[in-house]
Amino acid sequence: MKTHRQSVTRAFTLIELLITITIIAILASLTAAGIVNVIDQGNRLKVRAFAMDLKSGIENFHTEYNRYPTDSNVAGSNGEDTPEVLTDGSNSLVDAIMGIPPTSSGAMDLNPKRIPFSNFPPANNGRHGLVGSTRPFKLADMYGQPYHILLDTNGDNQVKNPDVSNTDPKISANQAAYLVTKVAVYSSGKDQIPRTGDDITTWRPK
Image (cartoon, rainbow, N blue to C red; front, side, top):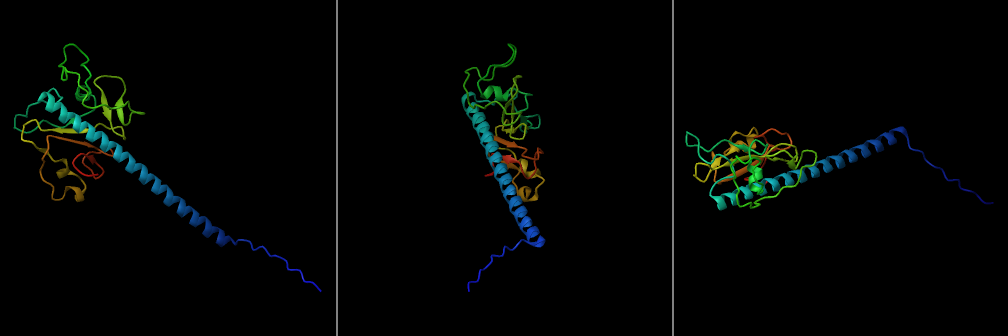
């Protein structure tokens, strides 16, 4: 006499389904967080590369012309360096280091040799490049903000260290008052607020 075994299919209980869904949701959130972190790190690297290129272009300009690519190259009345310069289109610094002639015949021609010390691509939706077609050009970071530039206009081979007044105590602690450099460049980072913990600078490794 033959016996026939019947296969029994065991269904998931409601609790097991909820546990499975929860695990999938946790894994998905971890993956999403990892992707966001990778994107953020990639953006920071791109911004720092631009900042370093900008710094190098200004330094090479100074070597060639013995002046900075700005209208003012002298220290203030107190002997301090001139204030920060922004790549917001309020000055012709970006045009000058790219070798672009001035917009009007009466403007000072900062780069008469037309040497391209740096080159920057057009921005994408106002980010990471030259913004618009209005001259002087604006140069924006990945977050649509201008770069901040400090220049040694008093000739002491140093500039004030922005990290002294950084709101992040891990950064501002034990900082020297000055950076030993002729040119320093930084971006205000993803939060778009200068001198905070996520600033992207040319003097820090990251």
